[in-house]
Amino acid sequence: MQTLVIAAAVIAACLVGLRWALYKSFQVPRLAPDSCPADHGLVGQRVEISGANGKTLRGWFIPSADDACAPAILLMHGWGAEHSSLLPLTPPLHQAGFALLLMDARSHGASDADSFSSMPRFAEDVEAGLNWLRQRPAIDAHRLAVIGHSVGGAAALLAASRQTELGAVVSLAAFDHPERVMRVYLKRLHIPYRPLGWLICRYVERVIGHRFDHIAPIATIGRVRCPVLIGHGADDQMVPSDAARAIHARATATATAQLRILDGTGHEDCPDMIGLGHLLSAFLCAAMPQKPNGGPG
Image 1 (cartoon, helix red, strand yellow):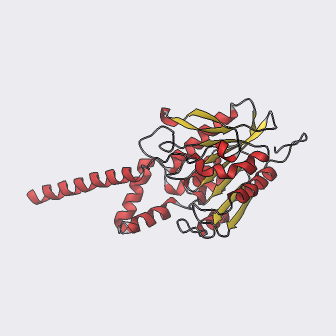
Image 2 (image 1 turned 90 degrees about the vertical axis):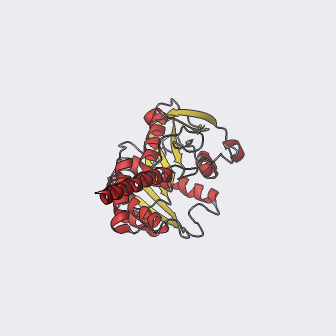
């Protein structure tokens, strides 16, 4: 009997320790922005946006320079980053006539902290930003697009799969399935997938409130109804470019999906951010054709 009690106590302690470790893994260190719109020749205004769970999201809004009813792009960073990581992309997008919203996800940058971070919560923050843009008088609510990087790219696809009026979505350097990411993470910790790793994955699903198979980019891409650009670095060592090919292969006929594998580009490092900005601008202008009076839309 005493042996059983001790065994039960050990198992309970292990479960508590595992729960603590998992919650710690869903928390990220705060990074301060290393640039602002003015550093890229743009005029922006700081904004606060009401997000899920009563949290406030913060970032920069850069109005369009030449359109009173402009199309707009929401840009979402990746895990552990903040809005300024995507600022180098913005000059070509702004020159093309787009208004821009760069946000910090919850628990990132200047936004409020939440109990944990997850890709579905990134998607909720994307949706909060889109709702904020739709309420702006100088924004055409029918001409909105999202650009997301890494976890933000996966979140962009998840959010787009739930949006009926989104004009376009760009997913950069996204993973194809959360289970694959978890397997890599568990391998680094020397935790075997069967049976412990599998049980951990199921517990993570319970914590975040979503099944991996439902929120995986290879699943959400099939529910997107707007044009999609899937971009990935050929030299990405964190998320191999095969992930982008797998996502693209699951696109359906209801959404026009393009795949671009970028030579000389890793997960975080792109040697030509301005060139990438022009590539994204060309895609978004084609996805949301010009209005008769000019300007993308």
